[in-house]
Image (cartoon, rainbow, N blue to C red):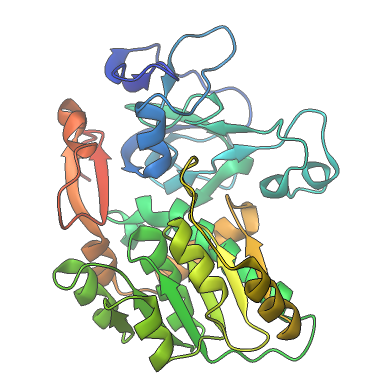
Length: 353
């Protein structure tokens, strides 16, 4: 069986290899792989900067943004052949920490969790894969072309949940949100903001093309003249930061209205220094009761919420997020960016149904 594999921390090692077909055990689904999404984490792994192979193995099957169709399900599992499913990425640590013991493995305290396609567990970029029924999420059949968006949607579902939990420490009725970055995470965060009835603004550098059209398709407002210009027009109650650009991060923290919440979802590259006026920033955060939080990964409840959000979204708009569909045989193309890219996926050459 073919799978897309890499030697973690070895740049240039990405290759399609033959591996053994999975043999599901009790309580596991056998899934025909349809597609995997490519994100920044995958690119870091391929560049040799990140990732861990399963113990005793040199290579890791990558791919954590999954989509597949059930080929075989255990009796009484709640799943059936041909169900459209996505596999959850993270598994709790075996110790476990308190958060993992309470089912909140996305908030693991000791870092001993494992992750499909990232950390010590093979991912989903293979012709077939298996997954525990308790870590499989069924999708609406109408999402067969776009269901690979579920994992990134689960990430922003968690981010919005964190914003609302923090806001609930006092009266909180946000009206405006600024999303910085119009990549997949930013656009999906905007989608969930619109679903909440908020006035949504999205900031990015590009001035034309797919990203402004997608924002307009949500009924949101697109900005490309910089953060200062955007904030001059709207003092946001909530900022979802999805660029990871250090200067944007700190500027966004200072941009909110009083009692503002900034949720950081973009991972910044290390090693770049910037100068900030920390005293003024601290003063504003304290005197305005502002909050800055980080959010990463997702739990089972976030996947369920994301599945509902995608089922209720416009399919044409969701399809617009997927810029290119690259077959497994041409996987290198998926890691070569093109100017108008939003989300690139690798199709696993499963037969159409």
